[in-house]
Image (tube, rainbow, N blue to C red; front, side):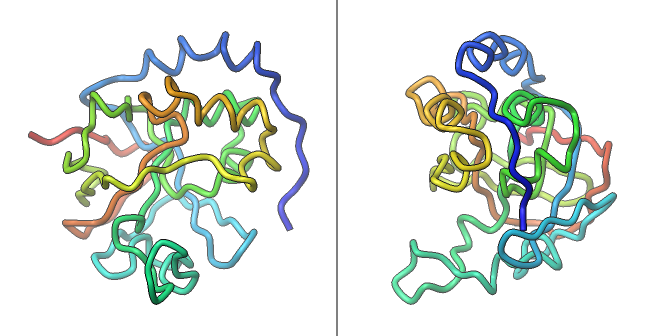
Length: 189
């Protein structure tokens, strides 16, 4: 079971946005890796294997399936979720990756994830793997609100939040490889 945590109020979220928007645009780093082996379970990793078929190896993405596909099978466009680490610090109320992982994302990066910076189809090198950014939006939901508060949900789902992809982005693995904490994360041409 995931822990209950205090929620950051909207004025603090608004005040912290400037720091999130200072994220590097071309090259950043991998700040945290989380695997979700089962519903409401998180494992923080020092490294992960990113696989064409499984996404983050050991994650429950494939087994969980998706409400976005007719047969409820896993959706390749939502294979790997990536969140800005500065935003994770802001909504989680601090630098503890265990709290960031409550968001349910797998990769937490110090990189600008905004639509202008990384339109759908863009590619990101993460360690030796390459991800392709999906068109599928990654929005805050009821679970996000329960873990981080309604203010945080409204913040990430606002028009500005969507433009900057504050909630993060969906991607799929196009080149398998290994990602380690501290590895570079870079936009590819």
